[in-house]
Structure formats: structure tokens, C-alpha cells
Amino acid sequence: MFLTYNRNHNFSPILEHVNATFNQVICSGASVFVIHNDSIVLEEYIGKQSNKSEARIVKEDTQFHVASVRKSYIGFAVAYAVFYGYIDSIDDPVLKYLPELEVSIWQDTTIRHLLTHTHGLHQKEQTVFREYPAGQNWTYRQVGIDALTQIIKRATKKTVSDIIHELVFTPLGFSESDWYAHRNEKLVDVILRYGDTQWKTSESTAGDKKNMYVSARELAFWGYLHLNQGYIGGKQIVPKEIIQLATSVHSPTAIDQDLPQNGFLWFVKDLPAKKSEIGSGVPKGSYQILGNTGVTLLVIPQENLVAVRMFNSFGSPEGYDYLSDVRSFGDTLMSCLKIQSFNV
Image (cartoon, rainbow, N blue to C red; front, side, top):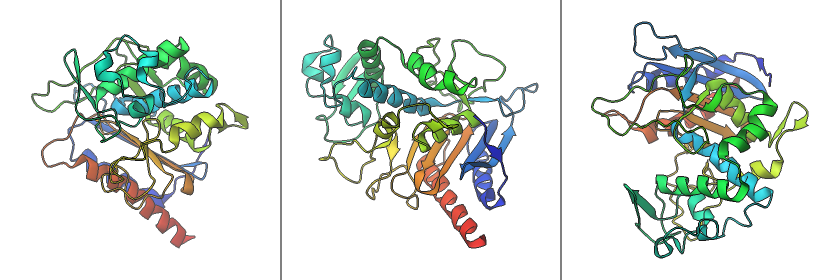
């Protein structure tokens, strides 16, 4: 995939925003990549891939650990399974595909609940338990993601990684996006807070674990594929229905409207919501995915825009408000567009 680089200084406030965040979080490197009206208007790389004295500087091919941004790829794989009939409906019960699960715990939980973080389940060690009735609240829990990757494998006989490589990475020639069993020179170190014990790695390459690394440009192109509903370079690379499924609101209608609204794991801007993770100035129909390493991918179809910011931090240091910062990232983008409109 090739887009022309046409630096637009109206987007300089976004670079300033990323530099400000870089100086607030605990990290060694960062990058920012913005596509607007089918041109690359901002592309910058900051710092080094680790804190080691001999560390490689952050470059175009540097791959950042994307943490929960990986869920956009899982959501895509579910949309693929629905579109091709491997999954009959997202309102199917989870037990239809994973009958070995504990019936008393899972019986009221559907695939929709997993996709929208409304399943109400939690897990400690090997024990899964219910926090609240399915569809009645919103909580960001790993147990739902684990169930989704198992359903994908059971229904399609393919892993998340298989599906993504077959439909996207191979046709588009992506070589800087993958799940890695072992480190290589292009992968950043994740810089942990002092005493952090929550960081875990994996050697799975099936797309089911938290070991996905992506370059800023390929994450932006992933967003650009969605922006264009699967149509790239004069070809329909992915059926548009898959993208539409993944990026439309599917949250249960009975849920509190001030809670975050989700598509297939994407956060989607719909009605105004106090607890939305998308900036208040970002228009309806936009969608975003976030990671605990500071990585953010925001797609704004109304403005024909895709924006990526990447850091190699983990978690929020004292005094740093992650959600406020990521909301202001989107709002700063919108202010850049107003500057552009004024200058035209």
C-alpha cells in the first residue's frame, strides 16, 4: 500500500500532544502517524526502542507492543466468522460454541456480550465468576477476549492470526504486524513502572495472546483499510460487510447510555456518553481502539482521517490521566481540522 507523504503543518499540534504525553509517561520511544484525505500528513518518530545505551532509534519499521489494540484484529476475525456463516448470530449463546464451559456461569452470555464488554464475567487464576448479569453493565475483562478467540478457532478451524494473514497481511504485503514468539531488533522494549508485576509475555503466534507488535505506519494502514471499508488500491481486499459489522454499534440497547459503546471490540462514537473513551469533539460514527502501552488508533470517517500514536510505556504513572489524555488526542485532531478549514 502506498500513500503520498504531504506534510501538513496544520497537524503540528498533534505532534506537540504526543511529545507532551511522551514526557508524562514512562517510556523511551514514541511515534505518530496521521492520514488525511488519502495523504500522509504527519509522520514522526521519537526516542529509542529501549532504555539501553546501545538501543536502536525509533524508525519507520519499529514495531510497538500494541496491547489491547490487538482486539481490533480479534473483532475483525469475529466479523469474518459471522459474514461467512461460521457463526450464525452474535446473539448466539457462548455455550453453543464452547459447550464445555460451566453452564451455571455462562448460560446467559452471548457473543454480543463478549464483543461489547457487557458479559459481566471476571476471572481470578483459573476460576471464572459472575460480577453482574449479562448485558446489564460494562467492564473491561480479559475472560471475554479469551472466550472469543476460542470461539473463532472452534467455529472457523482457523486462528485469529490465520484469518488476519489470509485476508489482510498477505494481500497488502504487511511485514511489520504480527504476533511474535521471540524478540527481534525491530521490537521495542516495554518500559515498566517501578515494581510492576502485571506485565506478561507469550510465545503463542495464534493471535490469542498479548504479544502483538505493529509499526505505526502499518497500524495506520490497518485503520485506513477500515476507513475505506476494505477497498484499497482499486481492489475490494476485504468484503465491506466485514468492516461494517466490526465498526457499527452492537452494545445491548438496555445498557446505560453513558457507558462506552462498542462495535466488535472497537469503541464507537454514537450518542453522547459521559464514560466514552473518544473525545467529545470527535463526530458520530468515529471509532477507536486503545492499548495499555499508550497506543491509540482513531478513525474518523466523517473527516476521512486516520490517526495513530504509539508509546512503549505500560500503565499510567502517578498523576497521569490516561483516559483524559486519549480523549484530548481526538479533540486535538478535530482542532487541527478546524485550523485547516480556516486556512483554506
